Image (cartoon, rainbow, N blue to C red; front, side, top):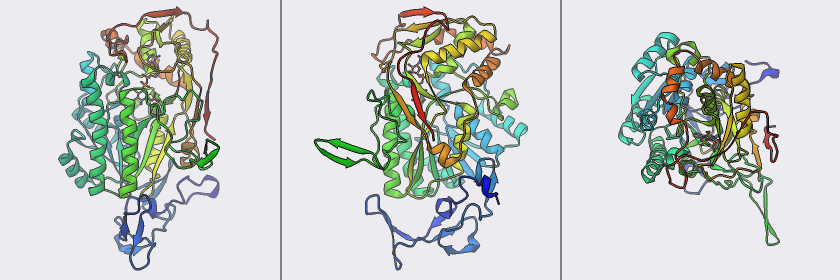
Length: 506
Ligand code: USQ
C-alpha cells in the first residue's frame, strides 16, 4: 500500500471503474443520458468480478488500492497483466506504446492494415528511420524485451474480423490510433478527403458498435486532436472538450449556464473534421450504451526517443519528413540536415500545442491505468507546451548550429487556410491534476535527440533520397504547386511579437 504522501492519483477508484467488473443489474437506458438501475431495489448497482469470481455479486466498492488485481507502478495502480488492444499498432505512436505497455506487463494485442506505409509510399517518401516488416518487428520485441504481442493484419472497417478478434482477446482497454493522421493528405483531392473521412469516421463508428456488443466494459482511449478546436480569434479558452460548470452564455439580456456542453469545434482540414465527427459519435455511444471513453485532444507530436525504442535499432519507430506525414518539428530538423531553409508557412505566428513522444506515451499509460466509469465520456487536452511555428524554427536552428549546420529560415506562402496570428489559451488540467502527469521532456532536449539520430551514418543517406518530398505542394485550394518564397532570413534576426500562447495547467 502507498504512503499518504505519495498516494497515486487512482488509489481511490473502485470496481466501478474497473474493466473486470460486469454489471449484473438490469439497466434502463431509455432516459437519454440518465440511465438507471431497474429492479427490486431501484438505483442499486451490483457487479461480478471476472478476475475474482469467488466474490460473487456485490456492490462496486473495492478500491484499486485494496484490490490485489491492481498493482502499484510509477504511473499509479495498474491492472495486473492488463489486456490492451492497440488499433494502429504499426504506426509512429502505436508501435511505441505497444513496447512501453508490454514492458509494464500488459498483455498487448493489436491490428494494423499498413495504410500509413502505403500512403507514405504513395507520396514517394519513406520513413527516414528504418523500420522492418511487422513479423521482424515482433520477433525483435520478443528477443530484446521478452514481449509476445498478439498482432493481426486487419482493416478497422472489417467488422467481422474485428469482432472475432475482440471476442478472442476481450481487451480491457482499447487504444484507437487507427486513423489517417494527415491534414495535407486529406486536402489532396476528393478521393483523399473521402478516404480519410471514410477510414477515420466509419472506422470509429464500426468500432463503437463492436465494443457495445463484445466488450462494453472496456475503456476506449481514443486519439483526437487539438486541431478539432481550431484557434478561435476571440481568444476563448480551449477548454477540455466541455464548458466548465461556471461558464455562462449571455445574449439578448438573458443568460444560460453552458456547463457540461460540448465546446464549439472549428477544425482546420477535412482530416480534422473527421476527428470532430468521431467526438460526437463516441459521446453518443457513451450516452446510449454506457460505453466509456477518454477522447484525447493531442497537440502536434515530435521526437524519436522512449526507453524502449532506443534499446535496439530494430525497435525504432517510424519517422516521416514528407509534406503529408511529417509534423513540423520533425520536418524542421530534417530540413536543417538537408540544407533546406526551414519552411515556415505564412507569418509563422500560428501557435500550436506540442508534446514529445515519450511524454505522450506516459500520458497514454496513465489514462489506460485509470479507466473511466460506465457511461463516462471525458476529454483531455494532451499538450506540454505552446509554441509559435517560427519560434520552433529558431530552436531547431540553434540546436542545428551545435551539430555544425548553418540553418536559414524561409517564410513560404501558406499552402493551408489557417489563422496566422491569433490568441491561443489552452486548458490542460486533467492530465496533471487527475492523472498525475508532469511533462519530463524539454523541447530543446528532444530536438537534440532527433539531430543525434538523424545524423547517424545509416540515416543521412535515407534523408537525402527523399529530399524531393519535403517542400509543400498540396494547397487547401486544391491546386498542386510550389509555394512562393516570401522571405529568407537568418535565425536570431527577428523579434517575436504579437500574441503569446497561454497554457493553463494548474
Ligand atoms: N507548418 C509549417 N511548416 C511546415 C509544416 C507545418 O509552418 O513545414 C505549420 C502548419 O501550417 C501548422 C503547424 O505548423 O500551422 C502544425 O502543422 P503540422 O503539419 O505539424 O501539424 P498538423 O497538420 O496540425 O497535424 C499534426 C498531425 C495530426 C494531429 C495534429 C495535432 O499530423 O495528426 O492531429 O498535428 S494539432 O495540430 O494540434 O491539431
